[in-house]
Length: 543
Image (cartoon, rainbow, N blue to C red; front, side):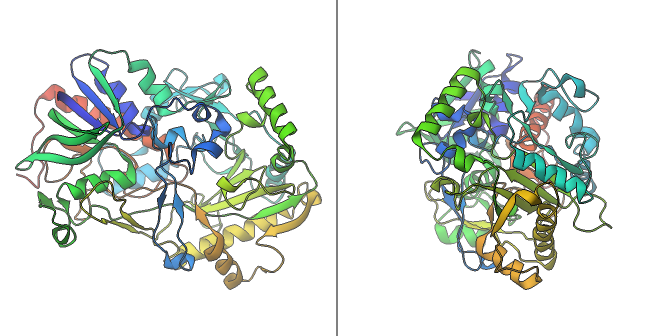
């Protein structure tokens, strides 16, 4: 099976690449998805993440190693196992991050990745339904549907008002020129349906004769001729197949699978790969390192207001909600994972926000265990730019064996200080009118945890969880800690790139789906530009 371009992974970035690389009809393109098709109805219903996360048919169901920063706890890390990748099972929240994120990438030597470079790519990708906001930064004719939250609840609205009353500002558009402030979330939805990367980019391209989409096609390893990647070996529906890439292989399998593919194929640290019997192709000790994630603390407040907890408390109520969605595409089933957000500062001397809130009109101990029996809301808070960095470790030379995930949460004082202050700010806002009068009890951390630093930090270590944003494991850069260069070429290898959240040198200040789609857009421009010029020149390290 010969193609010009082989894209590994039909997730947030991979679907973008499949569309853009096949659009001009010049190139024969294949996109390989190890998971299945996105035909499961709950994928397309916004609240369906309750049915797709922790579901082995749609979720890879990774788990971390016991983490010292979490007092030895292991966390579940959901990752999409379906066309659209994690954009098919995520919370549907559209967040670009701060301009300073991308300017910071550029200051690290990544030419072409400043905010002025990537802002047009965000705009190009976006079809924002709010026409009053279309401007030099917001797009109205891209493939990715973005809408404002329309289904809300009083507890969320009152919390946002309380934040303003507590001295924080209301954000005009957190995806615009200034992220700071509180507001309702923007969502990757349209008319009450999820707009995954597969819906936005892959579906319109599927009928092209030069595009081949293969599901249940899991890469076993890449193939090389010297230092050139020539293709790959995959298992497609139980049959081993060899595929040749005449131009390039692009890894878009995500921050866990992309570095794993590199390592099992012989690109990584020799002292880690040799003991597993992996033949080295190129040594790069940075592969699988620089792992970053957002850790959320989840304060929960019992309330006298109605919340989703009580709205779904009987089968009859659930049936009525289902009928409401069928009739109107509205109601609780059209809700995203969170309704309200806030990008705030823990210290006045900070230039930009360093914490983010996710305000949810429901509460649960675990998302897959159902809501609490009492009425409550959750005011989740996370640190936007954690300093703590983890790594991946191969369990074996077999791609079917998940890598060992070492997040290394809360390993620095700054990270501990920030999350503790984030919890204190949550308490201050929730103790402010008008939400304060509707709070009957703080369920978590609870009255047994005071505002004392050590008490809050211990509660965070015992209860906090991921908000599903693994990044950074194939770091883009120009230093010895880089895996790919600023054109996303794997350093030391020809014909191979990485284009997904793993290339982020520093995690973005917010949710990661929209930036991953932007990375797909950027990668497609770079790849097509090089293809038009002919064979890409060797990287500096190969010369």
